[in-house]
Length: 332
Image (tube, rainbow, N blue to C red; front, side, top):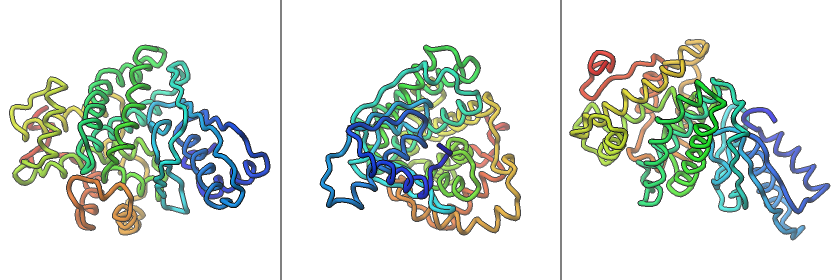
């Protein structure tokens, strides 16, 4: 299975499943494998309703700690240079099996990418317009476990305790966002990944802090609900958070430090993408992000200008603290 399953992959799966309709489907693999299986089962039921066949029992066994797809009603399928997000209750697997031994051999770079995806799921579900007490409780626990255990997974992949904690965090984050949905970090990352094939978790990592700062309105009063909730997360991480502004700044520093600890690229420009080509495709990516199904639940409604600026900030990797001072200077 290739990363980012496309429509052709789904069609091939539909033909195989139509010829040998199973009682049980097992998806063993990363998010792409599980998403592809979801799309095959869903699409076949939609295109062949006259067959009146019972939906097969669907078992998802993740081998990466990232997407949480084993417990979500979401599936992402690529159509040309655009990632389409399917959302339907029937996409939810019947059984999810978590085994940390299955992720012990994941290489450090992929561990970092997928781990930052987990963090992004939690952050976006936490400040979503559809957030609830239930999704908030899950998201808070996930954020704590990511900052505590992800660096250990990256350094020592055979540490099964750390792997178990990150695997659980990935699943809990999936539970959070399948109920609360996500935000524009994912919208922007879907478009960036679709156009330039940047791995999904890495794309989220490149964009995440910029979106946190924008959602918190760091250039304004920094008094949004999102700012207060980000500050709450900083407090849970035992970071300085005497005010929303300080809490947001602390969280931004922590995100940047986590990326640096795992040798992740600072900006999109560090990924090998050609600058003129990035500028040429920028309006296309912005259009995709505006249409993305994750955008409506972002806590702050974006327009094309805001998304363009977020992409440009992420290109340079520049990140400022609330008040505009570079983070390294203000808090380094």
